[in-house]
Length: 96
Image 1 (tube, rainbow, N blue to C red):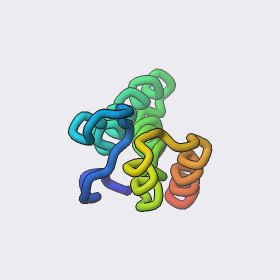
Image 2: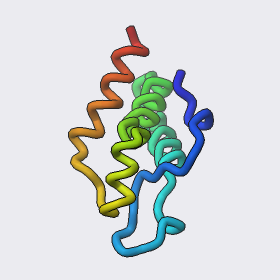
Image 3: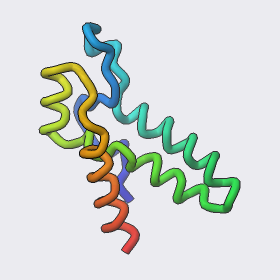
């Protein structure tokens, strides 16, 4: 399993336009929060661990250097369709 804690460096999930990076949401924090929330929803039908993984992987594309470079340069969120692509690919590879 891809562990969030094994990834080093400064990665961001969400920014605040015009605000310094210190106020942006770290990607690790965002992914863990969403993973726990998704686990809670999925527990109701017996798929808590799958829900956790879906939450953890949903923004996997944000761990790519091109996204982070773009994100830091223009300080806005990119098209979410592009980001979902990476989480989908990861899920397909690791669930096979």
